[in-house]
Length: 492
Image 1 (cartoon, rainbow, N blue to C red):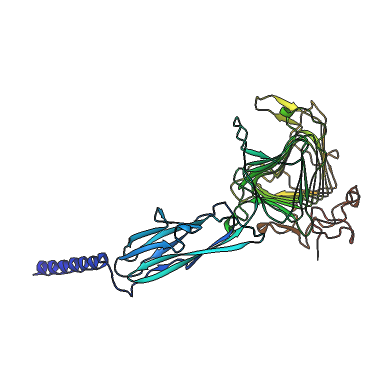
Image 2 (image 1 turned 135 degrees about the vertical axis):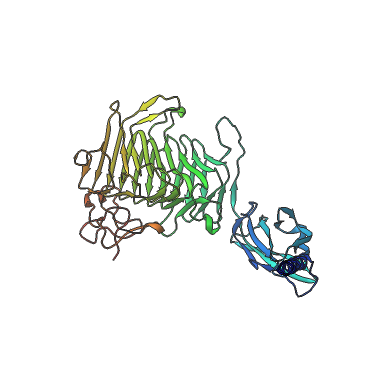
């Protein structure tokens, strides 16, 4: 009897399960059974005309107890729509008879390419995706903000190690902030050419793209405290706003004394500034870059990379780089005043110190080239989160003069090869004392009230021409006991 009872119960359970499965597989035709969506609207941040947007996605759910058939999924704008869709791997403007099991879902992907027009300000384009199910019509709105821009696309494809590039068409080119500038490939400022970039100009660089100031070319960036010039990747979506490695670098070769970058923001590339006297380009005379009031951050490799160059720098903040914030090799003449180098890189494990100095360079053929080098770091800060505790490496060869010195600065250092008591290299220093930045996670390197950098600078270094009586934010350095170390003067 017990066996018969268990058999009856088992058969009943099997029957119930089978019946439930049949109901789930059954196709609903009830007009009350509708779809639900993870988003009722999909928004695209500013998209430059002629460039495709990032791909957005959302999910379409069947919350009902039976399988549902979507008789039609289509763009309301049809084939003339600026948007494109892909339904579970199938690209089309219109797809029919898509079925979703009970309680299941599918993905819909969307992207947009916007046609150019004559508008200077951002404008809106929109469409919708229509879903027809059991006589019901539901929709998901698509909205994109378009922006016209001046585009520079490559027209030279030499190969042999050269990246695709184009050359500025005029000897003297001025970029204003009327429209953004979009650079695809490398844009070359050729010999005897000058590119001047005025305040407020937004420069967007595509993947693997850069600005190349060739031998005897000149770059002049005229940002202001109120309107910086910004160099960044082309993606405007939130997830890309502080993402490193979106473009390549600003690369400046030898032969010009007039390179100047003032009040710029250079972010999210591979190398911020590479100022390099290339042996392959031959002797072109003295090379000089003046760098002031500039913020360089989120570089996948280096913030500033100097090779046998002359750089005068003040009021700069270089932060969060995958390798060095400052790498200077094979000689040159470098003077940094009131600069903050703060490397709290979190993209992966950083193994390199923030600053490396060397008067030598190992070439691709393994030959070593040495040149005279002078380096001074005055009223500054070098700090970071390197696990070894050391943010400075100095590697010089006796084949050429190598003079380097830090004065009235804060430095994180744990390097047995460097004697921090040596007066030839260190004067009035604070070692391994946390500078007390406001918020390193938000890359806010202003000083707090308890910062040991307060009043640690020397007024004599402020007054070296050009006098830098104000910090990067325009705050006076002369109203209290002494200037603070770093790019920021403390504000109560």
